[in-house]
Image (cartoon, rainbow, N blue to C red):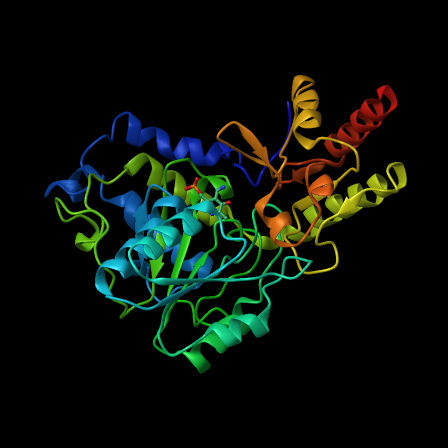
Length: 375
Ligand code: PMP
C-alpha cells in the first residue's frame, strides 16, 4: 500500500504502539484510583501532558485537558462559551473544519451572531475583513492554524495581535489539528495570544480517539463532561491510559525537523507533476502552506473517480471532497477561495508524512499518466 493521505490520519509509529501495549495488558488499572501511584496507571496522563507542554512550549502541563480528539475539543469551546455568555459575536473563518463550523451554527441558532471571515483566492484570511468584524461585543474568534485541504498556514501571530488590539477580552481559539508536528508552535512567543488550542494525536503518528484542548492559565472554561471529576472536573470519565501513553510518545517524536526533507520530496513531485500535466492547478502554491500537502486539480478529471482507481491499485490519496447526503460536494476550502466548480471537482489531495519516500510519489505520478493515456 502506498499511503498518501496523511492529513486524514497517520500511521502510529512502532514506539507509539509499544508504549500503549502495557496499558492494555498488565497495567490496565484505573488512573484515578487512590492506588494509581502504586499500580503505575497514573503515569500516561502526566507524561502526555509534559510532552505536549514541551512540544508547544506551554506554560505548564496542567494547561492540557485530554479529550477524544479535536472534534470534541472544538465542540467544547463553542458549547462552553455558549453556556457562559448570554449574547455576543463569534468570528470564524470561512474554511473551518465542520467540527468548528457546525457548533458555531448551533450557537447561531441560540441567538449568537456568527460572522464568517472570508479567505482570498489563495486561502489566506482576509485580514481587513477580520479587523472590520472585530467589534466590542466579540466574545470568541476561532481560526484554524493550518487548513486540512490546502495546507495553507494562517499568520497566527499577526491575527492574535490584531485580536488583542481590537478586542482584548475576546477568547481566541485555534484548531491546530493539522499544524502540530509540522510547523514550530510556541505558545509563549508568537502564539502567545491564543487562549485555546485543539489537537488530535492521530494526525501526528499517535493513536486515534485521543487529543485535547490547551487552555491558557487563568482562563475559566465550563466543564465538558460532568461525572467523576477527572481532569480537574473539566472532562470526567475514566482516563484512557493506553491512548495517553501513545500520545506521550507521539508528541515526543513529533518535530518539525523533518519538514525540510518532506518539503523537498513534495516540491519535486509538484515539479514533475507540472511537466507531465502542464495544465494542472496546484492550489495555494504561492502562499505559506504545510510542507507535506499538495492539493491539485486536473481539468476534466473527477477527483473521486481517480482516487477510487488509484485505491484499487493500492495508492491512497485524498480528494478534498466531502460526501454529504449522498452527493459529492467539492472541497469547502476551494469553494471559499472562489475556485470554479469544474476545477474543484478535479481535486486530488496528496499528503506526505515523514515515512513517505520519493519512490512512492514517483509511482503515483506514473499511475496518473497511465490513467490519462487510457482516457
Ligand atoms: N480539525 C481539522 C483541521 C481536521 O483536519 C480534523 C480531522 N480531519 C479535525 C478537526 C477533527 O479531528 P478528529 O476527527 O480527530 O476529531
